[in-house]
Length: 477
Image (cartoon, rainbow, N blue to C red; front, side, top):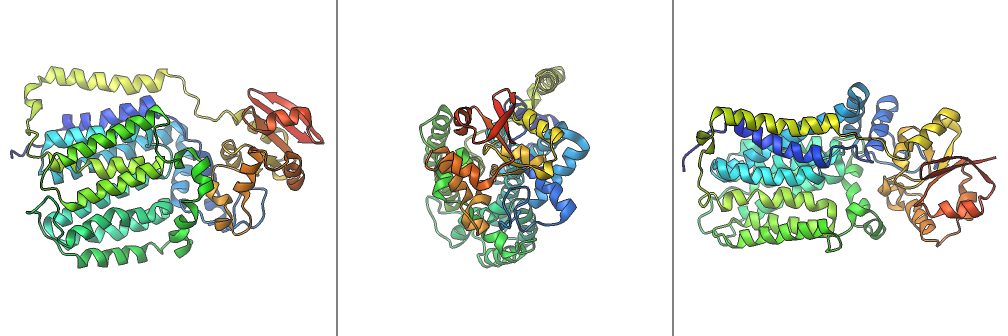
């Protein structure tokens, strides 16, 4: 196969198309961002917390499993603002795209045409939904790096490539410890493949198993280098798979036919299976990546990103001899290239400049009002689950916020606060008993809160002090 060098123009197309998807569909501040930077600020001022900061509760055990991300996000936001934060996400997207392209080029024997197609499709799917102001962007990068290194090792049997993996594990445990074991899950197919199983592939290259096992042990030991030690590594087992979270948190709900988005994803999954099974001589590691990430995608909507990353790049291997490696650029005049570059730049730039965006949550106005008119040190605020993130950012003590796993007894070792809050919403406990139990100084309810209409009828001794768009703010006299 002819080796065609990747030009600057080709890299521009690789990067700009996913960026367009990100800017047009996902150029916003995720709600979790607010408590992420609040925790980052807390670490810089007070060190690593071992009890949950900025809540009305005392002594709830706490593990800040993405502390490094929080610090980075906080500093970027402090010095460069929200636009600076979003441009940082674009930089991470470019890096992710670059290494994914390198991965596709590696497995396709440098089929530039095929690698470009697979990379653009994969990164556009990722950028459209999953690239956002959350710790997961670092996890995606680390997983792609793990796949790239394992493919290098599988191709060359050179142990030196594996030496990078402990560094990745050290970064992962501190950036996004919840997904630390995902590094190992993505490596498992390469262990099985090293056992010399052959499945529809009689001529695959062999590589040694022992170095992989040894480096995984070192990675596990490296993972202990974090402020919480082994507790951080094991945190995932008490935070995921909890029935109450799977039933109430949107991103943890299993994939189904309930929405148009789910149907599109399921169609893509079936299409990928069709493309796999039309091919021959497939290394078993690619089948295992396909089956494993499919299970993860159906089990939890957030894990669709793992399917996109782990199951699509092997298409570069499967079709490396079927897609002709043509250098299309040779047939594109320079003036047309310039027109393409300018046109593709106009779309994201004009979108950023001319489309009015409000990066703040709807709860900003009433929460800012509270901070301005009351001493936040004395506030004990009842608030809705999603609205709690911005209140935590403003250093107001709240009853709940989107850190759902923090409010599980399995993690905080004190009380099932999230279960109690859920029962309140389902009318399984009386709202008056809940209010009297925690003796809130203020109550902020939006139109979707189950207490919104109840407080209108009986405010339990609280006074409506101000109405906002979709919100009512009450204070205890």
